[in-house]
Length: 119
Image (cartoon, rainbow, N blue to C red; front, side):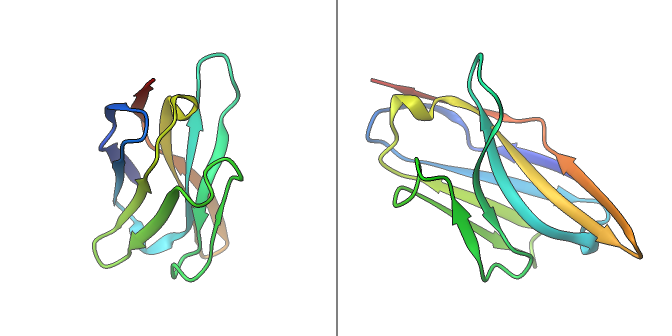
């Protein structure tokens, strides 16, 4: 499975961005997916996650009410709508996929996309 993020960039505080994650390869085994982020000098942290069918989501407390995760399984895409962005949201954002098929479990990461929020 290959994951490719896009949509990052530079935005002013209070602005919005929409991140996309395109999955390819053996996508039929993809289960839950999520967005993580890592700021300089900090550990990678979970931002939002979504179940395989999209029926359940969870968010880090720091982004609740501002970010929305979604996925379109028909298009093998996942999204993160980010509103009311703050400088502390600045980080590299990574797409993650949990994969499982025939008793085999794997986890995949994208290469990341930079989000920079200026004050």
